[in-house]
Length: 249
Image (cartoon, rainbow, N blue to C red; front, top):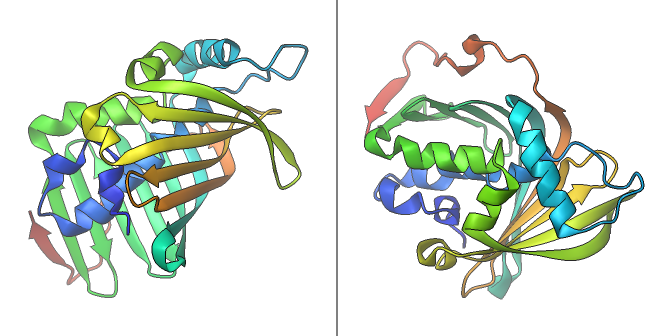
């Protein structure tokens, strides 16, 4: 089974924080790493060839005015060897170094990043776990930028990138990219990362993260994506109910 934090190089920095390892970093990454697709908002389908260079060029230009994002999220985890599948639904808000991932089903919980602090609130337990990433915040910011605001050059620096071609997702014609990590640490976790782009909007329709060795994978679908919504600071403030147990890791 893929442990969600193991989807990034952030994993070593959260060792021993089980809930942070499973949820917080995934929210920062799947929104983040995979969400790089949300940057390319200019259509290449309007008289331009579908090439990798063209896509990366649009990432360069669109990164200049990316500020925030909101989306509905469906995450499906597949364990290949036993053909087991589980699905989770939620909503995502991202702005700068702030992130709010609200899991609505099947097991409600809230994952909040505000600056250096990750919080995971589980309403069924009336418990919130808090972890200060401190000196590792720059690394977290790097991944946030990779997903939301990175340039094509920055993407190339971290990955070998291949344009797979066109694919149909529902009624949409998508362009698919395949990313292979250059970092040995990340390559131990991912064999590849796939991103599907809607060719009419150049927003992410889907990402897939495949685990090295086992072949287990997480597929993330984004719907109702809004680029640069006005998200107030209040959305990123903790609002835990009275009586919630706070545990600082």
